[in-house]
Every structure is written in C-alpha cells, then in structure tokens.
Image 1 (tube, rainbow, N blue to C red):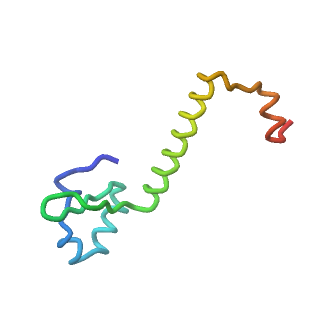
Image 2 (image 1 turned 180 degrees about the vertical axis):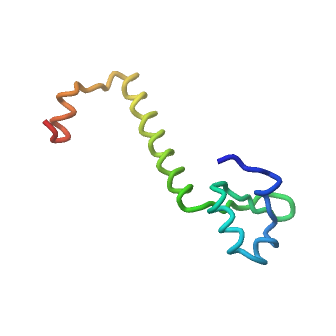
Length: 89
C-alpha cells in the first residue's frame, strides 16, 4: 500500500468536485489518497477493505508486542494452562 505521489495526492478542492471518483480510485487502487489544503496534508481517503486490514494488522502487532513484553517480564504460562484457561482441553 505504497502512495504514488504523482497520483495519490490531491487537493481538497479537487476532492470536492467529484468525491465519488476519488473514493473509487482509492478503493480500486488499494492505495490511500492524501487530501491537501494549502499544500499541507489534512486527511486520508482509504478503501474500507484496506482500512480494516490495517486495523487488524495494528491490533495483531499490539498483541504480539504485549506478549513479548510479558515473556520478558517472566509472565509465561505452560501450554496446558493456556488450554485450560481457554477451555480447549
């Protein structure tokens, strides 16, 4: 999901002219589009599927990080204990 600055940066005024076209471009290209006002980024238009995937990846990475911190702090459980806790004997 890499931005192509030649295609994926548009002004807010351009967005106002035809928002549906811009939203469809973001959805079909699977890339976010940066909206600018007076030369500064102000918002991002992104397809829903890419947004949901990004959120899921973010939550997954947070869980991995938390798990690594717990391991470092010595807060480990044996696999059998985890299975019992989750009710999957």
